Image 1 (cartoon, one colour):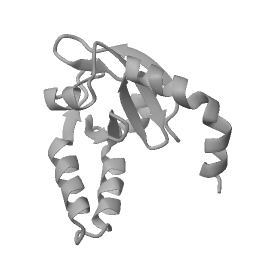
Image 2 (tube, rainbow, N blue to C red):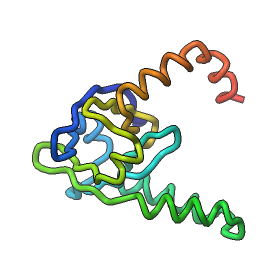
Image 3 (cartoon, rainbow, N blue to C red):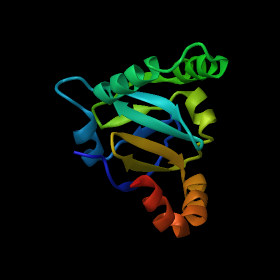
Length: 145
């Protein structure tokens, strides 16, 4: 199933984030509570299941490492990505470097985006929505070309 939905959450003082049950149910496979948290475009974070992170890694492996920009991206991406584990209350702890990358404040928004969950600062997400909502039809046409 594709991950969908929008959930507002609060980061606690230890930078723990409660992942909504519908998202946890889609992300977690079997007994493992491990997920992967990585930097994403547009100043967001991406939360992946182990399988989805592995698919992304295989896709990145296929890119040309001959390009300096690709090598730099891979260094930045993998050095910031981290395996995180859901605790007994369904929370993950976001490392400080990723909190800084996404400029997360206390109020965050989790978005289901097909095979991953994006974590946005609430104000950043609100700005994204206000500047892109009117483009929905044009963006849909481009996506379905």
